[in-house]
Image (cartoon, helix red, strand yellow):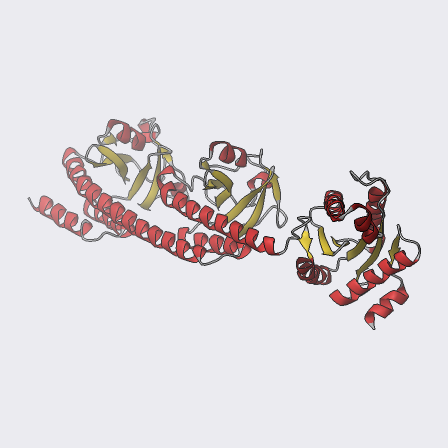
Length: 496
């Protein structure tokens, strides 16, 4: 009776806390001290992988607790399959034995059961042969029943606390994202909040742009294998599967994936959740972990809720961007207006200064446009403006900016471009307009253009624009239908 009384006291001690790690340590300490065990461990069952992973142990050899045990391996796995204790009187004579300590001579594996379900294994090892008699086995089995209840209570408590933290995180993300309307600020904020709330190694946001998917923001502790603003084909995995199915993709082991596809050098597992708004896949929220098997289907619900909030916030930011763009668009031609040009040239000059790269401006003007309006009417003149705008946009890069500066005058911002390259582009546009057949216009339409570059022709917005204007004036004075690069004298005049 005294042994049962001690066992009862031990059970009460185990049931006295809900902290999972504390529960496990108490179980092991009581089992070791009361039953005089050399080595004792608790392995928890991962239902998804069917692996028994060491959560806590006493007495195992170094690094032996790093490996999982499959349910079809060892005495531990046998106890799970049989759902009853499995005993090896002499481990040297039992082929099922997996060595965890060189001193072990006998081993008893007892399944930890909640109702009719195995949640783990209490593994007891002794340095004596045939150490576990029937009474000790019976007492340990009774003890494991109490330990199972304590373990399940601790896991439920831990799960509820985790859910409470996740709900708080979801609420925080909802509050913070709905208050941010600038897309770039929003994406950075989302990555930061998710990385902090869900304790993952790295968080990335990808947005779809035509046939590519572009990394727009990321945050975390891993090392990127890509340049800022990296673009990937939407046909590349896992994006292809995410977009095709509008479903979440879990990659549990990236060790065989090359760095360029893994995205982060230390990443070993990845979770990709589609960002869906009004049935449209905007991109993907991607979480990386430095551990294998870090993401589980059972944990998806809160993360997918976060992805839905992000998608709605991104869609709202897109709407705000569109409204802002309308204020920067020319109503007749659909290209950007002078207001937008004045804003962007400041940004481009600052970028060129910071990165030590060039940028250039082309100021172009349709020759004798007033005569065209007088001869053929304003409706036809408007159509010529629209077609010239369309020609310009199709001929320059996406990173360049075409604006209607006023009337029949256009301004083109060329990034990472020097003066000679800008002259070549302006000449190509001039020839294209000269040879273009404008419907309803029986004569040739031509244009004149002036070119200036930063920093050669000026170091401020006004200096560069004024120099390009001087070049345009020189082209007009020289007989029109030509391109003139601003000269040093014109640049000096711009400076004055």
